[in-house]
Amino acid sequence: MGAHARTSHPGPRPPAVPPRDHRLPFPASALNAVPGRGTERLLEVLTPVHSERLDALNGVLRCFSDVRDFAGVLAEADGYPVLAVSQVSGYGGTLTLGCAYHRDLGCWWIVTLGTKGRVAWIAAAREPRRVVRLVVADMRKRNTHEHA
View 1 (tube, rainbow, N blue to C red):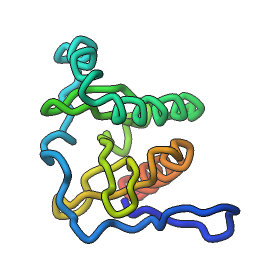
View 2 (cartoon, helix red, strand yellow; view 1 turned 120 degrees about the vertical axis):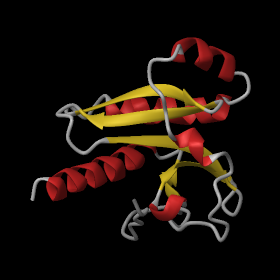
View 3 (tube, helix red, strand yellow; view 1 turned 90 degrees about the vertical axis):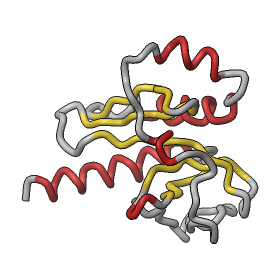
View 4 (cartoon, one colour; view 1 turned 30 degrees about the vertical axis):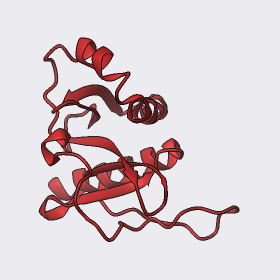
């Protein structure tokens, strides 16, 4: 999923472009969540270490509660918190979101794996509604292409 920037909104916004370094700032396998393996207990352990990531992912999860046909669950993958998002219909698969610090822009961003295993920087974590809009649009588009 590419990050899309609008230019018609008021106020400054960092550009929605990937940084020069496309390597994930954590293991790529961390975006392969394995639901149901004692996640709640693991997240309790992760909270002191990854509080910024968990706060950001919880913000996105709260915004997903406004979208009727989508569901999300916090999970753990390779010691990192992630958010697994799926359409309730079961179509479109599951998209696993992580949170990484964008060194060039100096803030936390919501990320996922893009093509060829490269990180896809979706949007700044401080914009959870924008993250949800972009993810929902991408997953609905994916659903349309699967059934075309």
